[in-house]
Length: 344
Image (cartoon, rainbow, N blue to C red; front, side, top):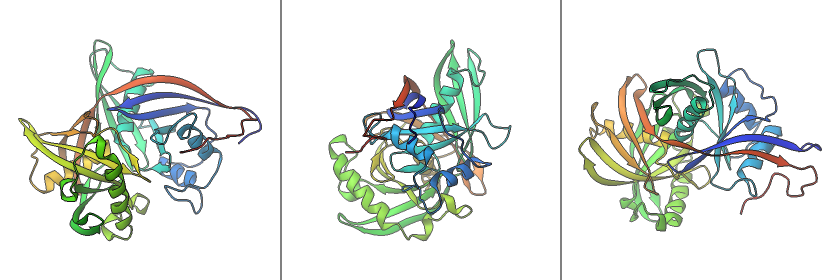
């Protein structure tokens, strides 16, 4: 990196336990006219979503996701200009392996941050809407307020479509059937019970390993290709889900989402919840006045519902909570031999 000290300011949130590090100051200039273009430029010529080419922006991503300033489960976003003046902000989502096209838990955190920081005006009581441009399109975070505090955030996702049902995949744990849905990113859903597993913290090594195996097995699957935008193609996350008894308002499931190169989502996964909603609606398991109680591997909860129909599938809304955990000024001194850090 630069011979001069590098300073990056960030605000950290967690959404249902999953971290989200928001960076709005200290970034280099990021070329591109839209958020999608900026992501493509950030990846670099010949780079991929999980293997971007090195550059000044990617140096910062690595600095914030690697030890000693981060960790392998860190997630975050670079705040960038919106595509036009109809949105409040844009964001490039990132994790330890690269840049993603969608992030529901990050959208929830960004909505809370935009209101909490005063970027978007909000009433003391009632909702405030924050429009955010992400690489997969425009999403809206409705920030719920009571007595001057943010109590929850509901994000309305880009349209979610079911691409395929019951794709047979041979794994080290036997034959399983996989469902594919596109919800800003491509998700594969698999029953944990069909693999002889349960969604429990003690089984995370096995869940992570089979998630990576399934993702690799779907590398050439046509259903993982986005019908309209090739930049959104390829399996981003594998959702290993477990059926739980229904609630009075609809279905209840627990899941763990294994994404990128074996990362674990501590939250129920926001965009993944959209994918689950579309699949449940497709199978008649959820109706227009019901909601999904979606639990994570650590017991935190999102609720989701079908908000409408769309030619590309369904419109989904997912509600969760986000809490600020810290404000940071990260420094990389010129003589720090560890540079942008390391991963163990």
